[in-house]
Length: 452
Image (cartoon, rainbow, N blue to C red; front, side, top):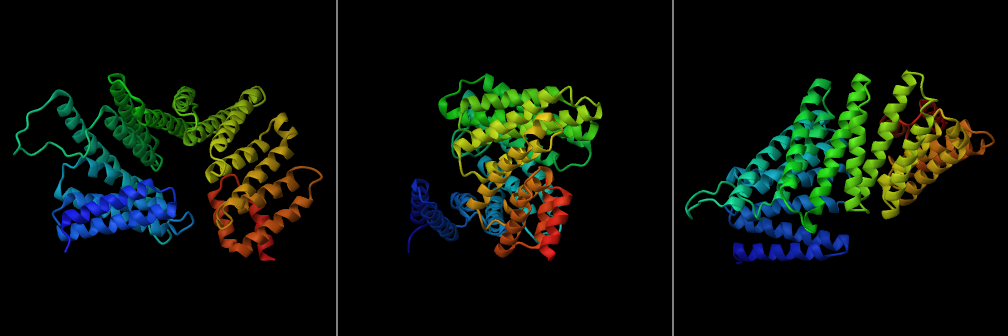
């Protein structure tokens, strides 16, 4: 019988093979095999924390290899197994900074995932609870990492028999601290988005901004190398997204436009992009930011009857948002999320109360139709994806422009094709509820088509 150490080494080798694979399927098989071997190693020696930790980590990695349109339960099942094993690691080793960080990361992902799973009675409550715990765990991980970093940087006495203040597999650098702080900020922002009371959100985001300031202070005191660039980019993106979330929520709850936060967020995302031009996520975040800023400013102008005076500026923001999404697509032509963003921004611009929007309405709606259709071409089986927005844009061309009534028949045919794929009236209504851009008039019309 093989010893625990031999099985552990085999697991490491399988994992390394998985890392080297270009084939997704082959990589998944190697990671699954690695997970099995780490599991066997731990069964042979239940006191072996390394096997348990690596088993948990590989289970987390395997989530990325679940097919795109698999049921969310499949990902959640893997994630929950990973989370339970990280918890066991911490039961055995409470000062394991890596396990604290990874458990927090797992809970943050769970908060996103749990609301996509059918049959969970209080998904919103579970998500909020997961984020609250994640924030606390990130804070604990940071405290331990900071102690390790100080010990490594300034030296510290520790006899061979003394219990270490904290445990981490790799040396803790200044940029490790920055990464943990930004992960903490991201989880805090997500938690804030779930809170009802604006005062609670303000307090939470104020605490998050203090962590951002702390991260910038660490950055200022340390010389970065090229390998530290991802941590710096993450800091810029976390800072910008926090400011954007704060500005959006401030306007929603108080009707006050926090232009300073919007502008700093735009400048900060521009810094992230300057460090990584093909950062698709940053380009999309910047597009969302311009769109959110434009929407808030236009509503304020509408309240003050000043839309016509600000038309050029507002149109420029929406145009810049479109440019950001297009740039993101240039780097990843088949990115479904970006395709939807392009469809949505064109559909939004077509409805703006501007002379230039009225002039370009037909072309803008045709562009929206093109991007939604492209999403369907790439993911035909995704019934909650581009099908209904594609039909919506064809319907809008018929209803909102002249001399295009044939598009109504086209929209009807799109819906019929969607039903053949598995679409239904209930799913139509669900898609409509989840899409704030979808006009009620279209949902009513489409429902009548499906009832025929």
